[in-house]
Length: 134
Image 1: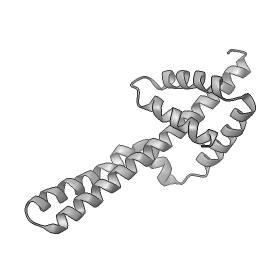
Image 2: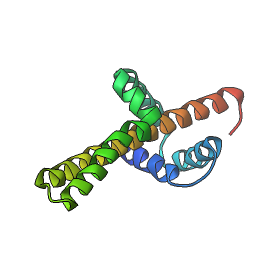
Image 3: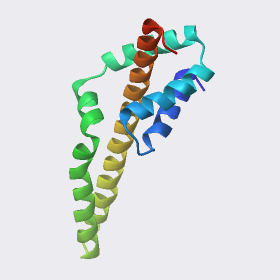
Image 4: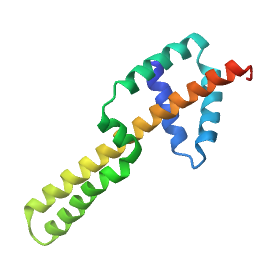
């Protein structure tokens, strides 16, 4: 597994905890400091910045509003279930398709948010090094 993927998984783990963004960055900063050398941090940060800046408007929208984007698909899924229970076979198809799309949007947004948290952490590390803090 590449170092970037491993760090994104660490950031996803931090997103699961209920805390402030600053606390998440702080905890992730400690983990990165222990496991990744300074040169690797710089390389990973550059790759991450290139990946994020290359993203489309859709990625930025889903990163910020993943639940809002997924909500209509959850609605289609719920209506499909209702139709399916009422005897319409096409309702089951709508329920499965709507649920699958909603879950896909949620997962995609989660990964995008984890990348942003990781980039914010690298920026925090660099800012602290510039200030002379550890």
